[in-house]
Length: 269
Image 1: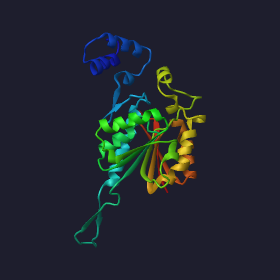
Image 2: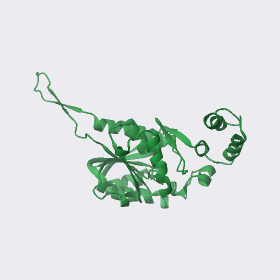
Image 3: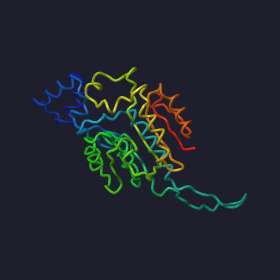
Image 4: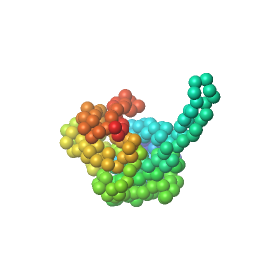
């Protein structure tokens, strides 16, 4: 075998049998077609994400911070003990749950991998998806169904950012992997440039045009203690922190598993 990817292709799609179709796929793979497109699906946390309409292929860097977000959402949902006892007395514990239903928005959803992973990990959350490309809406729906997310727990909006969702919609967490590549820097490989959707990759001037719009309007759709988690390039951290401060957020930026500043958490002040 020429590559690990060919081995995965043979095992995952062809059950180890080298057919004529397998060799045709190997040729497509050599020409840069993403492995996930050829197999038709990729793993993402505990989910299988289908790529029928060829959305942006989910990355392991995104997987990393979404796992951190799931932990933060769990903490939001945790029943907190309230101690009511004086010094030297036994503590009486009163259990309260201020967030019985946590609402999540997967903004710029693409395949829906972020929202699907959250919904599967946390069976009581309500997850909405927003995606601009209408051809990806069936893929998001399929990924919800194939990962056994109840229809009552998810809504999918074909929308340009917040424009198409109800004006009174409020979310505890908005999670977004928006287009953020700076065309002037453009670290994307030739395979990515040739095969993955440019609409999901490039964020305009400095890669920040979509991010600026999200931060400018997110507060209108967050609960009073809501959080915006957003993926970005490391060079964009300073600008994002300024946008956050101007927009009334506290902002912290965090490294991914490779030590690269990859995502920021904006919390309503």
